[in-house]
Each structure stands twice: as C-alpha cells, then as structure tokens.
Image (cartoon, rainbow, N blue to C red; front, side):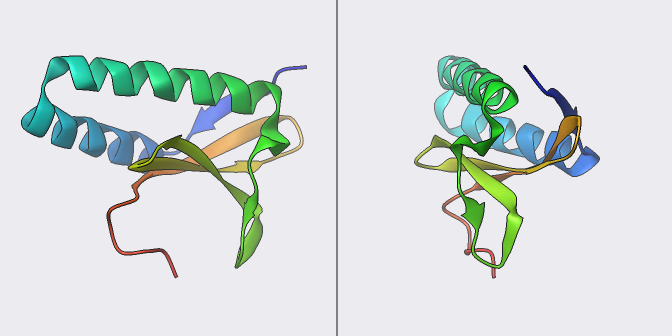
Length: 95
C-alpha cells in the first residue's frame, strides 16, 4: 500500500528556497540531481513511511535524509502523509 503525500505550504516554500540556494551556488545540474533524489526519498516514504526515525522531542514527526545537507520532516496520518517542511542541515539545529 502506498500513502498519498500532502505538502504543507511551508514544505513547498522551504523546498523552493533550498532549490534557489542550490541554483545560485551550483547551477541547474545540481538542482536537477536534488529534485531527483528528493522524488526517490518521497517515493520511499510513501511506500514505507516508518523507514526513518522519529525525532527526539516529537516522535510522531519523522526526519527523512535526502542528502547530507538536506532533510525532509513528515508526519504519518491514518490515510496520508503530511510533508511538513524541508530543512537545510547546515542551519542551526531544531530545538
């Protein structure tokens, strides 16, 4: 069974912001690679949502690893998965 992914507005904004940073610093090829990697991770999450661990302070929220510099945070609901936001791992850690 595959879950539907529902993207929050913050997820869309944070994904676009990371893509913009990549475009400015490294160009179109890196953005394309990032998008492909993100799609693969999201497909994996939709099929096996428990694959990534819950975070320490909110175990219902899981952190999916996209790249050493980027993660996606999501929450599993009964019949779908909420994609909450994307995180540039080089930022200050979440508390």
